[in-house]
Image 1 (cartoon, rainbow, N blue to C red):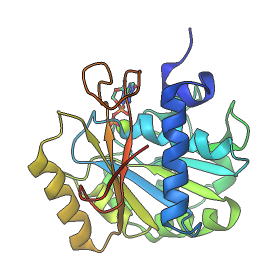
Image 2 (image 1 turned 30 degrees about the horizontal axis):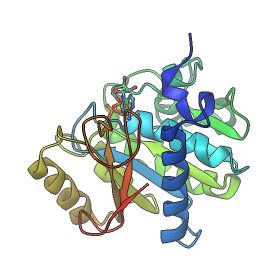
Image 3 (image 1 turned 180 degrees about the vertical axis):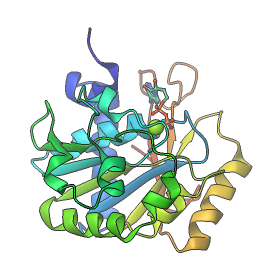
Length: 236
Ligand SMILES: Nc1ncnc2c1ncn2[C@@H]1O[C@H](COP(=O)(O)OP(=O)(O)O)[C@@H](O)[C@H]1O
Ligand SMILES: [Mg+2]
């Protein structure tokens, strides 16, 4: 069965794959190529953070960039399922065990240039583990070894995990699900990230139903990258 979470790899000519390439270009353009560490979050669960993280990572890997995808959702991370990788040794294990070498948790994937650190076992104390110097140092180490690092993060509301991580990365992108994410939740997520000092690079509007909405393309979903909250919305 074709894995629909790998659409950019499996259907490279699809409208969705094109959308991810444009999103990739927008990120490169707005950051003048300086951004290496990108965190993807949203206000709630189920808005498409993991789907977007996987496919954006593939879009960068297709450009011959060396890419690392890190599943930082220690509670519900699904990247091992998306990329069909074993999750017996992952980020939570590395953070909890100072003797574990980083090489032990980095896996090659079926996609050229794309490497992954899976979630690992669900720990009792995710927020504490993510706020350690070991996590911060991990990010600084992989910054040297990869062109792009994408963190698939937990939601920004309700738990502090993502907020801590936004202070370790170059840019944070917020995913919002079209007609599902509440405007107030999105605003609260933005505010919470800004309050801790995280830099927001944009908002992706996910799950736009192209059959019902009049954006001129045929296809089920579309992606939008907004450079400055909702004001300068660009289609991609
Ligand atoms: N644009 C999209 N097109 C198709 N399926 C999507 C899209 N966005 C999300 N999904 C699907 O919706 C479900 C929830 O998305 P997920 O990325 O796991 O959300 P989150 O990480 O925010 O909790 C998954 O089954 C995912 O494959
Ligand atoms: Mg997720």
